[in-house]
Amino acid sequence: MSRIIISLKPQFASLIEERKKNHEFRKKVPKRKPTEIWIYVTRPVAKLAYIAKVGNYIEYPKKIDNFGHGNTDFNAGTKTKYAYPIKSLYKLKKPIPLKELKAKFNFVAPQNFVYVDKYIELKKYLLEEVKEIKKIF
Image (cartoon, rainbow, N blue to C red; front, top):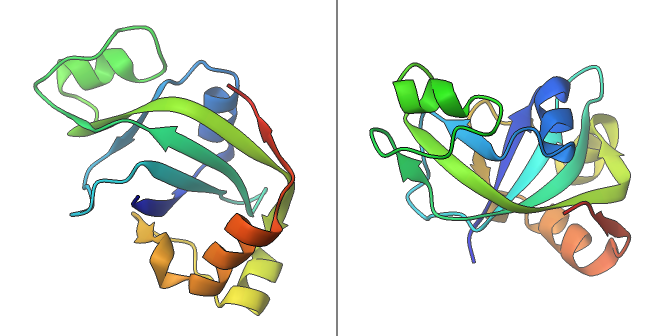
């Protein structure tokens, strides 16, 4: 299983949680296809807050359904080149603030993406110690 961490603006994270955004769009994709995307929500939230299970990316010019924020732009070729279908979403009941992420795990918010394996202690903490996550869908 491959996992990556991405940074998302709060409004896009909210759209995913509300199921109004059903794909995550990226300009670049990792060599190891992720099955999970950990979502760090940028300022003013500044917290690691979600874990999304995703399917294999769709590469433009292949089409996706038009029902979702950004989907028609992707299909028109005006968005980005890759779309990850979001299959399920989990929310940490206690999202981890950036200050704690930096202090405990030497975390730096990624510009594009970073493999979770870069942060071994964070991975261990989230997978073994953080038991309180809520399935959104």
